[in-house]
Structure formats: C-alpha cells, structure tokens
Image 1 (spheres, rainbow over the protein chains, first blue to last red):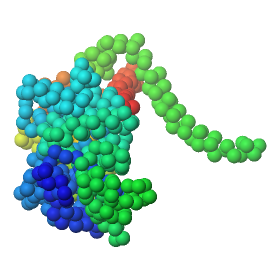
Image 2: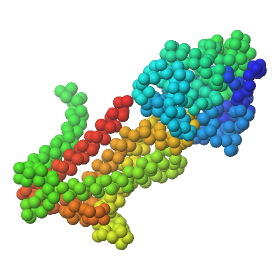
Image 3: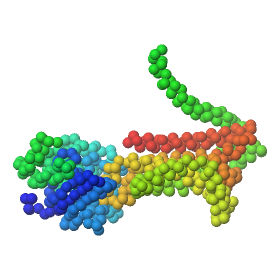
Image 4: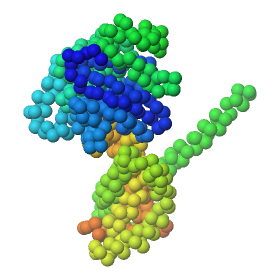
Length: 261
Length: 284
C-alpha cells in the first residue's frame, strides 16, 4: 500500500475466521497505519464488523469462533498464547453502534475503566474525567451534571460519552463500529470532526455503511465483500481518495457508486 | 342471539377468571371479618406488642412470634441469598451449556419438593447435627433458617438469573471493551444494572420464607418465648396458626385469624415492594 510516510500500527497476516463451520473472513492481509483513519466498508454480512472486532478480540465472546493467522499490534501477535486480552483492550478502545452507556452517572461511566486499571485517587480521576470529556467535545455540555445519570443524555451526547469513556483508558487505537448509524446528521458531523481531531493522536478504524462518511473522514479504505463461497474477503484496500476516484476492482466500483448493496 | 353465541367463550373465561379473583376477595374478607374483633377484644397494641401468648389465661400477645418470624426469615436470607445470587451468576455467566442444562431443571426440582419432606429431612439431619455440635435443643432458629434457605433458593436463583440474562449484551461488551476483566464486568457493571431484579428476587424469597409453615413447624421448636440466641426454639406467625387452629374457639380463634392478617399484610408489603422495584426498572 502506498501510504509510506506512516508507521504500521496493526498488521493482519493471513487471518481466517470461522463461526463454527461458516468461514466469515478468508485470508485477510492488511496494514493499518498509525495516526490515520481507516474506513472499513462493504455490504451487510461481509465481515467488516468481524474484521474490526479482531483487533480487540471481541470475537472471542462468541461461542464456537476459531481464528487462524496473526494480528500484530506494535509487532506483537495479539492472538499469541501468552497474550493477555485485558491488556490488549486497554490499548484498543471501542465505540459501539448504539451508545452503550452504563446505568450510572456520567462521571462513573468515565472512571470505571481507569479505576479498575489501578488509578484510585479522586484527584487523578477528576483530571481524567475532565480531559476525556474535553477530548470528546462534551465537557461544556455536562461539566455541571457529572453526577447525573448518563442515560439522561441525548443519543448524540451518549455516543460522545462512549468516546470519552474509551479515551479515559488512554488507548492507542480506537475502533468505531458503525458508531454514527443511530445518530442524527448533526451529531454525526460532530463525531466525524472528533475522529479527525483524534486521529492526530490515535489510530482510528471505523466500520461504516455510509460512503460519504468514509470519503469525508478516512485516509485509507478497506472494501470487504463475500465471494461465491460466502467467505468474507478484503477486495480492495487503498488510500481513500484513490479508491473512490478510481476503484481497481469492478465490485468496489459497483458498491461505491451504489449499484450494489 | 348470534352475537351472544360468538361472545360466549369470552363470558365463560371471564367467569372463570373472576372466580380466582373472588377467591382472593373471599379469603381476605373472611380473615379480616373474623380477625378484626381482636382490636376491641384484646386491643391492637396488646395484640401486636404483647409479650405473652397464653390463650388459656386470655393473653394474646404475638410479639415473640413476630420476632420468631423475622429472625427465621432473616437467617434464611443471610444463608440463602448469597448462595442464590452466586448460583445465578454462575449459571448466567460461567457455566458451560452442559452444566446449565442439568442445573436449571435441578433447581426447578428443588422448588417441587413438598415442604413436609424438607421438614422431615431437617428433623432427621439438621436438628441432631445442631444439637450435637452446637448445643441447645437442636429445634431452633438456625435449623429453620437452614431449611428455609434451601427452600428459597429456587426463587432467588431463577429471578436473579432472569434479570442478569435480560441485561442488554451491550453492557457486557462495553465493559469488556474497556479492559475490565470478566469478574469486574459482572461485579461493577452487570450486577448494579440488574440490581432491581436481584432485589426483587431477594424480597420474594424472604416472602416465601415468612409464609412457609409445614417445614418450619417440624424444626423450629414452637416455643412461645423471646429467643436469646439462634440456637433457641421459637414460634413463628405461621406455625402459631398451624399448631393451634385445630382446637381454637372464640377469642382464641379470633387471635389466630388476626395473626393471619398480620402475615397477610407483611407478605403484601413485600410483594408490592418487589413489584414496584421491577416495574420502576422496566420503565427506564
């Protein structure tokens, strides 16, 4: 891939993933670059969420899942036998499709991660709360209501609280799994601006159904699709500008021009 | 006429449904009518807070039995609730499917054992054990608490398990994605989120312990006295009715019905609290 100025943050090497006997991801090789936004696109059921969940091992939660190959984060295989998944998830944060605020206060939602990673002092936690909320562009709206329930916020605010919560654990990579699909256009714009801002510090990978969103915010785009045997394949992976202006593969072109899926 | 024919099944079901409600109304009405005169015959305060129950002397104080019921139910809760909640966590979060398919029906079976069998078993195993190793007559608060703890397990386990399983899986995923361990996720996210269901489970379990009669009669000792330790025998409100109803007449019978009213009110309050808590949860 052409993007040579940037360091490779994550590398997948011949990854195959099976749900029981169904082959969901077939031989995936991709480099994810540091401090960039990588968009994962493709029709429903092509394995793009599964691909995203490789990086924080969320697929492990599904019974009967088998994963072969390697996923290297900072050149270390996160699926190695001695790899500790809790440590991995401190480095790879995730924002889900629907805001999944816990039924507790705004402050508690943010400190739950850091507190269980050993930060106990109230002053330190206060700093984390303020910093994460500011990074998530939510501080001004909630600074006087930190002890109010997080579920009282609007959907867009809740999703930014989820981002703040993910930022509070100081990850290196943040995964966004269709995180704007349940939001109104204005909230979506705010989160896209946020992603662009966050990409200066973090490595960001987003799954999105929204082609404009992928084109607007991402530096690299990965197009997934199932092949004739229903195996999820990485069809094309290039800088977003190139892929959207001159897709190499016919399937990519059909998809991004809206003739498919 | 045709319209009536069409609606006939509806009327029949209405009638049958009404019969169950009217049973409730009848029983409630009957207990209240037969028990209420105690207020004038003995006096409400003397009845509820009286320390002496001696029908032959005309003394009808149920306070020792209230203490008996409370201590037995509390003991059952102290033993049964932690075990029950841990069991529900195990079933919903840790147990492999093979285990749950055996465990769940087994717990349901526990609920199906007749209470007289529990009582008999307690009398043969628990009572002598307490007498031999801990002292006292064996027939005691502790014996009844242990047996009731087992009897409330199915209620506590199944309701807490349901409330844990009903949590959106996004909570669990979200917590794990923050790098919490599985146990931290359960302890700090899932249990607090399922709190209202678990509290309801505990209340209903305690309610069951308060209402149980047969098993308790057999092992609690039935002595009408203020207990000084958990190894002392007591009498509960339910066993008081169970033991004396056969020969009670007049004011004595009134007093037993009034005991029933007290029980009825306590159970109603507990059930209403449990319902209120679960309803408040589902509104959110």
